[in-house]
Amino acid sequence: MTGSLLEIRDLRVSYAGAVQGLHGVTMDIPERAVVAVLGSNGAGKSTLLRAISGTLGMQGGAVEGGELLLGGRNLVDVDPAEIVRLGVVQVPEGRRIFGELTVDENLRAGAMSVRDRGARARARERVFELFPRLAERRTQRGALLSGGEQQMLAIGRALMTDPKLLLLDEPSLGLAPQVVAQIAKVIRQIHEQGTSVVLVEQNAAMALEIADRAYVLEVGTVALEGPAADLARSDEVRERYLGVGDTHAVEQALAEGPAIAKREGEAERRQVRTLGVENVTVRFGGLLALNDVSFTVEPGTVHAVIGPNGAGKSTCLNVLTGVYAPTEGRVRYGDEVLTGLRPHRIAKLGLSRTFQNIALSPGATVEENLLLGRHRLSKAGFVGAGLGLPSARRERGAQLARVHEIAGLLNLDHLLARPVAELPYGDRKRVELARALCADPGLLLLDEPVAGMNAGETQQMARTIRDVREVLGISIVLVEHDMAFVMGLTDRVTVLDFGRCIADGTPDEVQRDPEVLRAYLGTTSEEGAA
Image 1: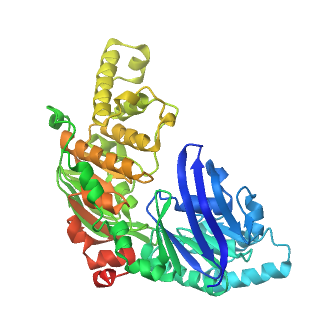
Image 2: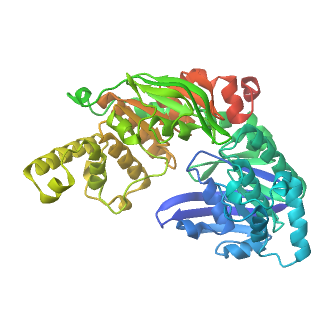
Image 3: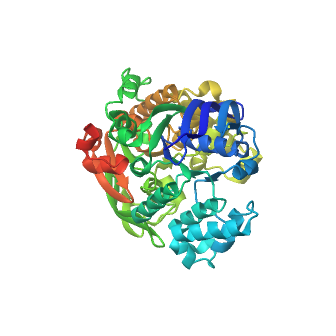
């Protein structure tokens, strides 16, 4: 490594003028280096790449302060096309290629700003040397490529401008282990050929293995930085990725006990049963998303399903709710077999979920959003409700009373008349949780409930989930990247890695499991303690 290629100084970013994405981030990206940027969902990693590439405005974001100095020139407010011409190119998360274009046509699209025909030809040959599979499939449409080949094409298209700095956003997401290893090898080759790389990754094991330097973001700030090899061995990284010794904040938030006593009649509203996931396998074409996964969620417990990005967590939730049908195996809820049932039938049996990305109606009030959660329990038909028949009015009154009870449990009763769009992020996450609870489930599935929250909001959500479990007596399955939150709140943890179940036990057992340490950090327990 030599001097700095890009200097990031006190960078501050917000969305819609209200939600803070980055709070004074400072980094140095050296020439001829791979810099890893790690952190949980909502930490600000993708926001950082958008700021560098000038694409924040497309997502409603803006730089409020700070500098992005490339060769002394500040990139803040520079047009994205000009940033590409200056040598900075981003590969967004999700393999966004042109599916109807061939491999060759995708590569030509990536070189539109390159006027020198010889430079375009050299860049194309470089791409085919890095990715021989693309050379073999150069006349094939992008939509017909495998997931790994599409990721290769996305990277190859970015390389067509011969960039000085390549920004990679989650290149390993959803890929099989062999493909991840191949992508990692190519990133090293790109670096060795003189291109600097900023690598945003949830797969810390892969990122720390190939990076020279690493930064760990936490709620929009730099929490840790240093040589990648040192961070891979550090206790601080183990704390952030496995929650080791870092659960005191959540434990302190839970120490006061439930805010509301268990309510009479709540048990009669629902049937809380044992959930059994039995040898579930899910295949998407040639991709094995889940491989013979089994675990049990006991009634009234909080059970976490964790793992690096691409481990199969979201696929697992989609199997439980009937969105995906397993290729093999089955799911039971008590005596009921859920496998083969449509999502609305599963919901009627008492399963309800929230989503990683908030799925509320922003223009509607909190009360109106919560009433949607009561929809499956409504008996009045469309005509009866529209005509305002007495039975429909009585039912609506009962539904509103239940909505107000749930809002009170989550301390949202004072917000019922407010449009969701006016609420802070943490309140909106609790509104989505409340809407799921308005369906009176026996089993609640939570997908990333604290993603993007600050420390205070995370502690409040921990108390809320604890109260929900204690007051309503329900079971909770929790998918979450914040390991301190998971380890301080849950009774049992199942760990997935590339679709396999590699560990299942108490939080303490999982934190010390060598397979879990390897999956998250690429280290054994002995190496992690060194």
